[in-house]
Structures are given as structure tokens and as C-alpha cells.
Image 1 (cartoon, one colour):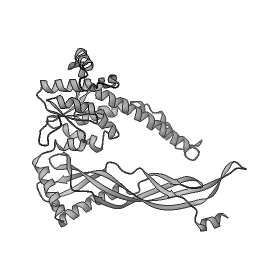
Image 2 (cartoon, rainbow, N blue to C red; image 1 turned 120 degrees about the horizontal axis):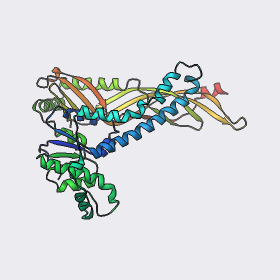
Image 3 (spheres, helix red, strand yellow; image 1 turned 180 degrees about the vertical axis):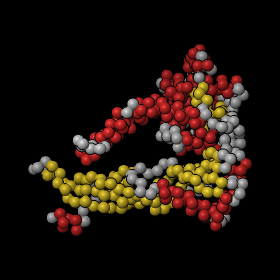
Image 4 (cartoon, helix red, strand yellow; image 1 turned 120 degrees about the vertical axis):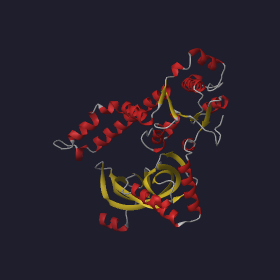
Length: 378
């Protein structure tokens, strides 16, 4: 069944699809907020099937990241890693270290420790006969059509979790992006389904002080209170620090061949989309708010232009240009507030602001040499 607004839950279950949606960033963002359950009375359930899927996906990420790193180092070889370079040992450490082979497993183990996850051994709660019965009777999460064999992991996870929840009289909130999960949860008395991870986390954060603070904050913002303006300015300052000298990928169009020579950017504008803030984590003297924002950045990029000489079969330099562009995007931000949550806005401070979906590339449009540049080239 779908989760009720005021229903209380004893445990949270997070599907692999949510980990993938959040880029497998175990240490930050919403996934990082799962650490709040370690010292709480809420169970964070991690079935061994999901643990295995996450481990497999992390290994693929590590392999692709390593390949990209090696390519980048090779591309920089002529200028950084030539014979006799002092950086050659660093390159060897980065590319040959055995720690890279173990990094995904160690990272997942650290995440389990930090989150206090209850690793559920599914084999202790579901049998092959139960699984096959669901399969042949086309019961959720097995669909009547399609490749039902792909749904075996989901069936194992949900059947095992459901049995564990019933045995322990536990109400579980399952977070996933899967219609088959939803169909199963609609028939379960112990598991509810939700797709929005931030909404799911907010359901576990109903302590009096944080919610009183949230009400105070939103009411002061809506009344255009001076303290609220100061509070938002502090958030803006943190966002400004976040984007200080950030370096996105450069994209552009040109009639000429172009190469990027580097860029740097900075914050140009920041505003909140609305006041529908969510508490996604909290402790005795802190809370983490999810806010929706519109962020604008300016970026200055340098480019080298050249044209292809068909006679010499080589590129001939035409000159360099520097151009500035602006980009705007929407992103959730996670704002960590510290201090006396029972006091006023002046009693708290902003400890950290994390931009959940920062811009990673900027399009500089069409690159052209100015008349001055053309004259110098001619």
C-alpha cells in the first residue's frame, strides 16, 4: 500500500534503483543521510541481494573511473610524465595500486558500518518453494508478461523483508523506482512503497525541536523577516563558496577546430524555488534541510582555434580566445543547520551546504575569432 502521511515506520528499505539514481555516492547527498539511523531506533535494512547488486555496480564504476583516469594521465604524458619527471611515481601509485581493486568493497563495508545497516540474509526468510509459487502464480513482483527471471532478485528481497517484518511486528517503508515493487507493497500489510527518497527520509524526522524550527523558519521567510533574510544570505554565501573556481567541462561549436585550454567559474545568482523544505536528517543540535533552488553561474573559458592544412596534413594554429558565458540550472541543496533548534534563527548557523546536482558542463556557444584576432593572424 502507499505510505500514509502520518503513519509511523520502524524501518526503511532502499532499493538498488535509488542508489543508482543517486550516483552510488554513499558518503554524501541523500545516501549519506542514511547514517542517521545508526544510533536511532529505526532499522535501515540492507538485504544481502541489494548489497551484492550495489557491490557489482560500484565495481563497474571503479573500473570505468580507472580507465578514464589512465586515459587522462596518458593524454598528459608529454608534459607531466616524461622521462625523468618527478611525477612518474605518483602516476604509478594511481594506476598500479592494488587499493583500487579493493576500493569498492572497502567503501561498501565502511558505508554499512557508518549507517548501522542491518544486513538481512534473505535465505533465512524465503525458501525456493515460496519463490517458485510466486513465480508460477504470477504474483507480485512477478509480472504476467516480460522476462520474469529478471524479477527474481526483487522477489527474494521483498518476500524476505516481508517475512522479517511480520516476525518482528515491524512497519517498513520501501523506497524504490519500480512498479513491480509498488504492486507487491500494495498487497502487503507490513511494507509501504514510496519513490521520493527525500520524502521517505522526512517521514523519519518528526522530532519536536526540528519541526518547530522548520515552522519558525518558513513563517519568518514568508513574512519577509530580517532574520530570515540573514539566514538565506548565509546559505547563499555557502553556495558561493561551493562554486568558487569550479571547473566544468567545456562544450562549444565552431567552424574551426578548437581545443579547451581551461576554464573557471563562479556563482552569479542564487534563489530558492519555494519554501517547501524537508527535514532529511537531524540530531540533538543539528538538522539537514532539503531545499529546491535555482542557481546561475558564470564561467570564463579559454580556447585555442586552428584549421586543418590539407597539404601538410596538420592543424595550424589561428590564435586563442577567452570568452565568458552564463548557465542556469535547478538543483536540490542540502543545508546543515547547527545550534539551538529551540531558539531563534540567530541562535543557529549554517555548517554546510551541498549542491545535490551541480552543473558539470557548460556550453560556450559558437567560437569565432574577433576582427582583431583575424588581423593578427593574417
